[in-house]
Length: 491
Image (cartoon, one colour):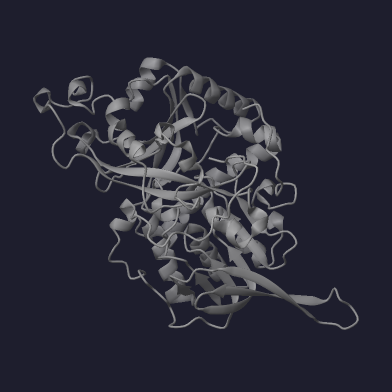
């Protein structure tokens, strides 16, 4: 979540020894581990992309397969490929349909708020098309998700946004199914405290497999040069005059500095999310880091086999509390994220996650681990033995005193997300810096936006207009957004 402060520390570079997520644990045979396309850095490249998560990988892909493709693209990664937020997320590709409409309308106006919702739904379709077209094996599942409220305060907030979205002409028919009957909401979601729920299109996937496939495709077919374990420590520019009589006629060249040497580039893409302000100080306070925690959970019999969950979900309570989960069709493992309300040191989830005050995804918070360990039993009917006969479909003789060895919490991990004041990313040319582009600040919601953001950014970099990108205008990193003043809303 975003936080206001009098001053913000530089996020620095990603820590050298991060923990492993479920996704990273299960891809230790990847040929991209420690990968460097060339032994040494090239002296120059048309485009340098900093960061190898989905933002960097998708931008490289759409640049290289699109019109006016650059002759050379170099990708620099501080750690392993896809070792940041993408490789640590909850495996959701879940658009906001109506959920954010009230907030976005207050900040940007009705039309722009509707564009954001349409953009996210289009991104879901783009992801499906990309995965099918390139035959990407990433456990992609396309179905529906529940947006569930488990107390009245959260329900009132969701209903307000739903009704406002409907009144403003937002597309709901055939897209969203709202259930306000409490008993029906409980039955559909299997949540004992459900007050209301809404279902809508969404997807789940194995994020590392998606990114690694895109990277390997770009390397093998389109000449991408990927250099892992090559942190960028500075990016500066020089200007060369093309005319002694007209100082306006000049070219800008970017110098990208790493511990392994310097590279010059015509264009630089900052796909650096939470760490953007390290290299672009103007983003200090405009993108702030925040730690998230997820768990992989082996289901009990009542949530296995034919009784697996049919939809993904996100459940809310209070003003801003929520958890989110998917159940993987391939192996039944549940990926559950959230638990922030249980943290005893709230500052830890806002970015100051180690003794240096810098983001740290090398460890985890014990309170959140305990919360995630017990969340399924706390919220879902039929998870614990005492609930097995309560409409779960489980056989009475399956009752037992405790979970079997191997069931329940398998492992949990942390990741660092980048948050913005207005809860939307920065995408586009960095104002006042020709040839510098940013795609960052995804607010823990990147999978629902990044593919379309990257495609739009590639269009812009290849000579297209902003209108050609299909991006909402509010995503641009304008001077108005780059300010140190809190967005005021009544939310």
